[in-house]
Image (cartoon, rainbow, N blue to C red; front, side, top):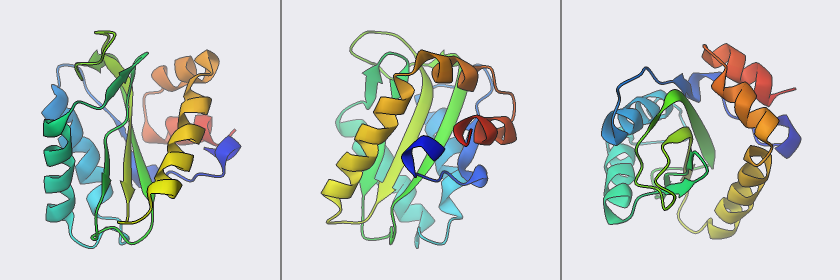
Length: 149
């Protein structure tokens, strides 16, 4: 997200097909991120994402979900982003499906970094024009281009 000085690698952007539930959507996003060398153990990363989501849903409303983990198997903060035109039920407080999923993977002890990244991402996603542009994307390359305008 150029406006934020936060880089989401193109390989960590996913366009979700219709009909996915929360678990399948998270699986796709975790798969896209697990190959990043800053994630030293893909299996531990996957486990942590699903364990965290089981504690409490990360659907925050307004069509956004922000799953997140802070684990030792992440050496540098990284983000993944998924776009679902149909939406995915993340049991958000407003009962609306999530169309934009931003998965935060951060190292243990990086609470301030995570909170700063979350604040920046949420500020950008409040821009409804940008949000609509993301929903109209059909490829990760299109999403990447929108984020880097």
